[in-house]
Every structure is written in C-alpha cells, then in structure tokens.
Image (cartoon, rainbow, N blue to C red; front, side, top):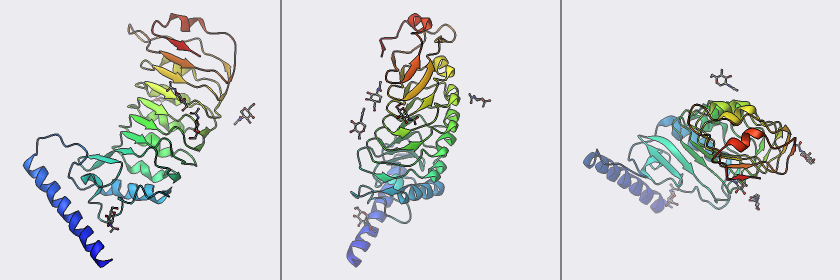
Length: 263
Ligand SMILES: *[C@@H]1O[C@H](CO)[C@@H](O)[C@H](O)[C@H]1NC(C)=O
Ligand SMILES: *[C@@H]1O[C@H](CO)[C@@H](O)[C@H](O)[C@H]1NC(C)=O
Ligand SMILES: *[C@@H]1O[C@H](CO)[C@@H](O)[C@H](O)[C@H]1NC(C)=O
Ligand SMILES: *[C@@H]1O[C@H](CO)[C@@H](O)[C@H](O)[C@H]1NC(C)=O
Ligand SMILES: *[C@@H]1O[C@H](CO)[C@@H](O)[C@H](O)[C@H]1NC(C)=O
C-alpha cells in the first residue's frame, strides 16, 4: 500500500517535472493531449463534481484520482484535453457510465466538446450547458437522459453539433436555438419531444442536417425554408418521419438546391 502510494507520487511528480521541462524547452510548439499546465482550480472542482455524480462501474475514471489535479492537463486523466490549463474536451463515449451529468460542470467555461454518447446516463441535461460561450459540440446520443432541453442552449453561439438523439427527452424544441446561428447538425430524433417545429430552425444559415424523426411533434411543417442573403441554404438532410405532423410538404423545401434527402 505504502509502496503504491509513494510510487504514484513519484510518478506524478516525474510527469509533472517532465511536463514543465517540455513546456520550458518547447514554448512555441503546439502541444496536443498534454499541455503541461496545472489545471484551473474551478475546472478541477468541476471535474471532481462531475465524477462524483457518475457511476463508473467499469473503473474507466480510475485515472482521475490525484488530489492536486496535476494529472488533469498532463494527459493522465482519461478523456480530458486542456489548453492553457482550461479543460476544452470531455470525451468519454462507450464507457458504460451511469448516474447523471453534474450541474456544476457549468464551471468548465472553456469547454468546446462534451462527448458522452453510448453510455447509460440518466437524469436531466444540465442547465449549465447554455453558459459555455465556446461550446461547439454536444454528443449525448444513446443514453437515458430525460426532462426537457434547457432553453439556455440558445446562448451557445458557437454550437455546431447538438446530438441528443435516442434518449427520453420530453418538452418542446427550444425556439432559442434560432440564436445558435452556427448550428450545422441537429439530431433530436428518437425522443418524446412534443409541440411544433420552431419556425426559427428554418432560418439557421448553416443547418445541414436536421433529424427530428421518432418524436411526438405535431402541427404543420413550417414553410419558411429560406437562406439568408445570397448564400444557398445549406440543408441536405431533413428527417421528420414518425411524428404527428400534419399538412403537406412545404413548397419552400423544394427550392433548397442542396437538399438530398427528406424522410
Ligand atoms: C491512480 O490511478 C493510477 C492508474 O490506475 C494508479 O496507477 C495509481 O496507483 C492511482 N493512485 C492512487 C493514489 O490511487
Ligand atoms: C438507442 O440506444 C439503444 C441503447 O443504447 C440501442 O440499443 C438502440 O439501437 C438505439 N436506437 C437507435 C435508433 O439508434
Ligand atoms: C440521428 O440519430 C439517430 C439515433 O441516434 C441515428 O440513427 C441517425 O443516424 C442520426 N441521423 C443523422 C443524420 O445524424
Ligand atoms: C436570441 O437572443 C436575443 C439576444 O440575446 C434574445 O433577445 C432573444 O430572445 C433570443 N431569441 C430566442 C428565440 O430565445
Ligand atoms: C408520445 O406519443 C405516444 C403515442 O401516441 C404516447 O404513448 C406517449 O405518451 C407520448 N409521449 C409524450 C411525452 O407525450
């Protein structure tokens, strides 16, 4: 016991020193998985809270165990990538992680990518998702998440991919998504979302994939699919089958030159 502990300390110190040396020797190189900087204390606390609410039955997060947080940005913590001591990626798909996603992970202000798909996460989506100005990709498909999609998601102006498909989400598609103007792929299929399709979705200039099939959506399909300005509207895939939508296929859809697939 004593031995393992001190060898771990030795290991942590060594990699820390190596990381410092690396940083010192190569200040201008681009550092990949390990940026050698001590993690920001708020991000460290947020990751600990995040781990605390997960059920990690297979022990995939056993590397998240040092108390000083030296391992976080040195590449020792599985699934974490940092830049300048701020956590930018959490990437832990296919890990059989259960429990819930901590609300406190909102402290991860620099987060760009949250990838936790194909796990068994339950409970609601954290409201804090919407308080991350740099968030680009949210991949939470194939989990057991419930509750509604927080309207604060519209505050993520950098959001490009939002894939919450194949969960148990209810409620409406938040109209606030109209403010995520860089959204490229929106997959909310295989949930229990109800209400109508927000008209704003038809005005997102970069939207290329819109998958809403297998939900409880009702009302008619909006007929306002137009690009903004001179750029052609980007939509290529639109999936709406298995809902309670009424009416006909809107005329404006036929004017989208890039559209390849409507299901
Ligand atoms: C932390 O986890 C690593 C990798 O599993 C292990 O080698 C090390 O002994 C652990 N350290 C502590 C303090 O539990
Ligand atoms: C939804 O997720 C479950 C469990 O991960 C999987 O078995 C099922 O095939 C998925 N359904 C779709 C449509 O992807
Ligand atoms: C949307 O999500 C469903 C369920 O996870 C998946 O089967 C489908 O391939 C996805 N569609 C697109 C276009 O990404
Ligand atoms: C989009 O953002 C603006 C400015 O922050 C806000 O006033 C507006 O209510 C938002 N739109 C939606 C539909 O939430
Ligand atoms: C969705 O529709 C199905 C089939 O009509 C129904 O059984 C289910 O209760 C509905 N779910 C919600 C959340 O409205």
